[in-house]
Image: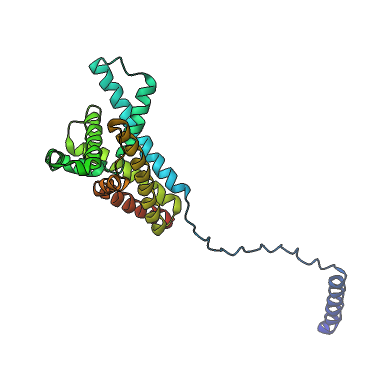
Length: 245
């Protein structure tokens, strides 16, 4: 009998609970705004002509700074008073611009003790090559007053380091080894054009007559292949390293 009495009560309690549940408002969960997933579109790599000018400016600034400091020290040690500041500036700028393509080759000739043999064997038909080598030799001689008397340190600091910095910077700006190759080659071509034009002007001022542009160009190419190789190789390395990022 007790079960019969409790059972209806339990039913009534269940009914009440059901009614209470029905009365309660079911609040739907707040919708979380879906974030739009941006698709990563691979950026198209383009050759940056600015990298050529940046690389060339690095080369010029490097050699200009060394030349300016070295000539200043030379003037002080030799007590030269005839050179004005403007002439000092012009000389420091012209030497690098006329010698940038040839400096690594000239340095190699000095290390292998072949520079003097080549200069003495040059005839008038290759006067442009002679002038190029002499300018390069003069630069190396002046640099030795500032940097070191060790020829191998000079070979690295003067004949390799500036081309490493210029080529690597140009390749890194392009973020591609192929474009780094092209940038290094264009830097060399730009330096070659400037050197040929300035050398032609210098020869005209010194000898009063123009030499064949072809002769001057051949002279620079024959004494400038190492700088081209360095710029291209370091341009590829710079582009490859940045391209992996």
